[in-house]
Each structure stands twice: as structure tokens, then as C-alpha cells.
Length: 431
Ligand code: PSV
Ligand code: MN
Ligand code: MN
Image (cartoon, rainbow, N blue to C red):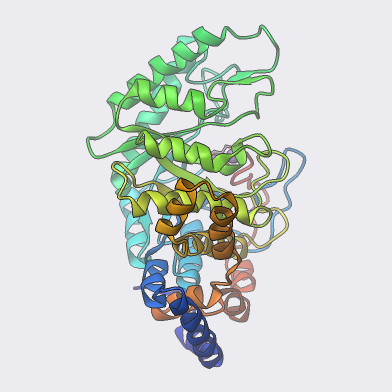
């Protein structure tokens, strides 16, 4: 497999840390063994865990006020893929990429697929973009796309989604994620029911174009860019649409798309129960769709979500198999560093959730022992599983300390030279 980080450097950095890791791992293994948990089983599962990287996350995001790009940022999808390869090489848990069209401009899909294959990267969900007009676009999305009152705009948005499915097929992807910015800013501006009917009719056309082995994922979002109402404002509308459309359509949960304090883990449980959980966009937030690094503010919430996911896995819940992905906007960090760190934080939540004694928890729940039930979760959350994560990385040839290797490699500096900044470049993910 083609590498972008010097293997000699990676091995030397790992060698410096290996003996400390072995001691920490042995100590944690002993501790877990006292609770009848086999550390090797957990480490093997950690090694299997993967979360996809969004192509747009590899560049500085920006806000609606400004964008402050860093040196050496990728200028096209091929360079974004290069950064995704680095992120995966070091973290060992991001073996797939999710592209966004037409932000990602591709002339030759086979060339792009070949580059991904060489890096051992897969393509997962493809994302359509009908939340902004493209230069020269004939029928605007200013008043909505799939739910626009004007048929010509709706048709354009439908056709774009069908095109995106075709691009995805060329790359070997298996799902389409649809998020639209449709909504209204003024009470009375939009007839709620008619707008939703138009949206559903448009989505039916896209659904018809899905290949047999594909899924379609709908992303709900409470507000922004529309600030009074949004067509798929929450998981309720999302689920209604997914149920209306059929079994290949499922709901996607982006953590930042809910009101603060929403019990997201319970939404996740409901979607699991009705076989409608399509996937996740992980990120963290304090106020709205802040798109901050995963687990940077609410690691316990992220753990509680994984508690539901691992529970479904444990119970062999039928129809369960969500796609995991990051969806973040990096404004003050090196995007590659944030993505490495965030992927590991998501993996950390998964591993901690594996430590919960499910049968004990069910017993506390049945016996209405609220305190012991909550401690069963809290004790798992409080355990530092870093040695497991580091060991999983070491065993697959990734870095014990990914950020240290990234910085030692001087990757960003090298890219600043290799990728002189295009003064006309626009944002690679400003939403
Ligand atoms: C919308 O806020 C969103 O979360 C959707 O996933 C978009 O595709 C993505 O952000 C674009 O940045
Ligand atoms: Mn998202
Ligand atoms: Mn978002």
C-alpha cells in the first residue's frame, strides 16, 4: 500500500514509546481481568472500528463571516485524498472517505478511484449539494431545492442527486446522503404541508434511481440556513420521510443538528428499534451546528450514544449497521490534526461502551436500581482506555502517538511547498 508518512520515522517514533505502552497495557489488562473483561477481545474490536472522513473536512471550514485558510491545504479532491491517507495511516481508524459534489470536482473517476485504492481508502456515502447555486445555474435554490415551489428548480435538484448516485457508483460507494437547506425565514412564508409534499415527491424520484444495494440517508437539521422552519427539522420529520420512502431510506443523525440538551441517545435508540438508523455525522457543539471536534465538549454524550450502539450490537438487533462519519469544520486547528484526534475520540467512546457489563445493567434496570445502573455506565466512561487504542494502532502499523508523528514528519510544511495557495480558491465546506 502506498504510504505518505515515512515508515522509518513512524517505526522510530513507535519504538520510543513501545515499552511504556506495554506496561500501561499490561496494567489495564490486569484491571479489566478483575472485572472479567478480556483486554485482547476489546483491542481486537477497537482495531476493527472505522469512522469515515468527509472530504470537505480536510480544508479550513470558515464561518459566514470569514475563512482563514492555512498553509498547504488541499486544493482539489486528489489532494484531499492525500490528506485522508495520512489521517488513516496515523490513526488506523479512518479507512474511508465521503465526497461532496460539486465541491469535489472530478473529471476522471477511475483515476480518483485508483488513487484511493493505492492508499487503501474506500469511498462511502456520497453527498449532494443543493443548498447553494453553482455559477451559471439556470434555476435557483434561493427558495429551496427539492421542495421549491418551482418545478424547474426541483427538477434540477432531483437530477443533481441522480448524477451524484452515478458518481458514487463509479467510486464504489453504497449510499447517498441528502441534506437540503430548504425552509423558511418568516412565519407564513411557506405552506408546511405542501412544502413537505413537494419534498417527498422529489425524494421519491431520487429513491427510484437508487441501485438495489444502495441506501439513502436523510439528514435532519433544526435550523440554518433557514431560521424559522426547516423542511426536515428534526428526527420526527426525518423518520416520517424515511418511512414514506421505503426500506432503503434511513435517517442520519448529525450530532450538531439538535437543540442544546436534546437527548440524542434516545433518538438513536428509537431509530435503531425501527431499523431506520442510517448513520452518523460526528462532531461536537455548544450552541448550534458548531461542527467542533468530536468529543471536545460532550464526551459523555458521545459515550451514551455509543452505549446505545453497542447495546444494539450486543443484542444482534435486526437491521442494525449504521455508517460512521465525522462532519466537522476546522477553523483554528490544522484540519488533519483535528480529524486524527476526533476519529480517535469517536473510537474511544465505542471502546468504553464495550466495557459496560450489559447483563448487569439489564439487571439494575429490571430491579429499578437507578444509581447502580448509572454507575455501570459511569464506571466504564471513567476508565482511561488510551492503552487499548494505542495498542490497536501499533498492531496495525499506525502510530502510538499519531499527532507526534504528524508533527515530526513536518507534513503540513511540506504541503505548503507542494501546494502553493490558489488566491481564487473558495471554501471547501462553509456550511
Ligand atoms: C449541514 O449542516 C451538514 O451537516 C451536511 O452534512 C452537509 O452536507 C455538511 O454539513 C456540509 O458542510
Ligand atoms: Mn452533517
Ligand atoms: Mn451540519
